[in-house]
Length: 327
Image (tube, rainbow, N blue to C red; front, top):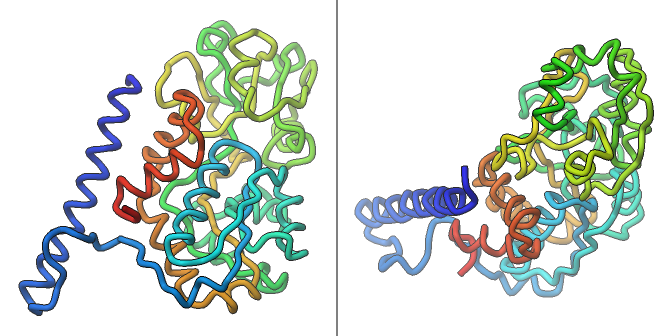
């Protein structure tokens, strides 16, 4: 599918959602006689509350495209609700992000349920629930013990994945991670620096699948496809929400047939202190603004940044505008 076709799909999807919102507002007016008219606002439009102006927030994200975009979506939405928002969108690994949150350096950041459960709360990957609501509920008590609040998950789910060039997959005759047995020792694997310590990355591939690689090389997460294209890597750790997988057939994802790389929806995690100070608009804005983040929409937003080279803040604003959250 071409990038222009993706743009058209995104715009049509946004228009459809807005049309539903306008229709809903019209129904309310017909029934009660007190609804807004004229199409000036939609059901999802964020309104500024002056009471929020004195509340300062610092929102963080980890340092890759999807997180940059999500961080900007939440930040711009909360600004629209009247909060005084700053951003720190280069926190690095989830451990660094968690420490920044616990220390008060940031007010909140987006995390993945699977990462929270496996990296923070010692779940085995195979024990991470496939149902996003159940996985979310599994995090609640543990986050509360840390003085943190996690909000309900996004519609889209993302996972680490083992990717390679489709021609390489055909050459090796592999379609699942288990197919790498007896072959991995001759192959190079590239992944993010923290992949070396993560059970849903290199550790899981070695311990759960019993694989050994000729070499593991840490690489900046933004280069995960470039190392494949240049032939530096035979295999690369990628994400299932990557734009490249949506717009190109040049890459193949190996099936995680043992469930070692669990998928995770995004949770916005904040300190209890922030939640108490910020009041009800904080959580309501977070939950509202992520309602339209389907897998297709997230891939589209990622493609705007990774392929079309838009700035994350511009892609985030496009999402908020096209779905009617801001004007």
